[in-house]
Length: 380
Image: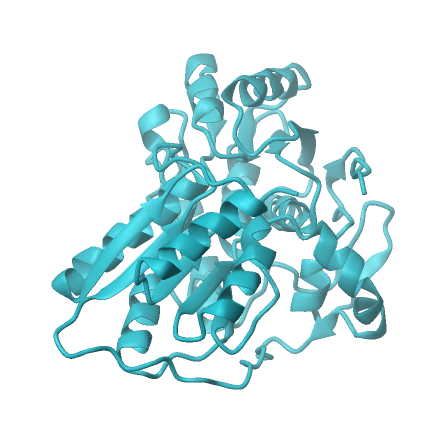
């Protein structure tokens, strides 16, 4: 099972989802778990912070974004912290070994940045009660383990709004990694934005079954262009899609970080993760003995996600429209899945006046109206 893979989550918790309403009021927030303060730091001793990465810091995607956050934390806290990171860590026994070694090396705060690190994180945490662990995209917590994730559906929606205005063929292509709730949620949020600005447009999806494979991503991009797409977006980590769009003189969106370097003309903007503030805040909480094992799922308003600067090829009125919706997300007056929301078959999934709540989003296994194609079956 790969990072950010919620398939097991849905399998284990699906029965509870079925018994719980998937709708909520717009201002409803999840509650943090019972708190437990971290051990106080020695005076003048820098906090040692460890990071465990699935990929390389040069992937310009998921791992690169996390490492930018690490560097931001270093810049913010300077000599108050000392960081270490380990790249290309496989899930399972390898992850457990690396996490355990970071704890043995004296790191008092450890960020594990892949879904597949969840069980190894929990296992090691039991043996190091004086170490704080933060696991990205997971759902298991403990007295010294918190979890975190960005509300990427918000910037996805904004990029969809742009795509709807920039397409001339009314066909937008989406390259997905794996058909798991996180990716399906992003595709659907993107399509919600597309349909807001262009109800006639359709979103076609192709799956590459990989988080990072430039060759497959490029092949999928070509296939989508063959199907009529003149705007592309992705839930994969490389810059290959933007590079391809630049060569073909069409538009594309990056993912995770600003990918404009791969195509100055083609790149419209990127939905981005901004981990720096979160990493800084958690380090400060450990240093001040105020850390709590929370389940953090923050959006644009908290500074965890956003979009990169928009290409000036986007008309000013469209940019204004996008910025206005962004402000609504910040103010809490809009949601990517504001009802009514219909699925592909025309069934109302979210009634008018309601929104799809966090449980519904985490278990999302259906496409919204406007997406062509079916969701591939996943292997158990």
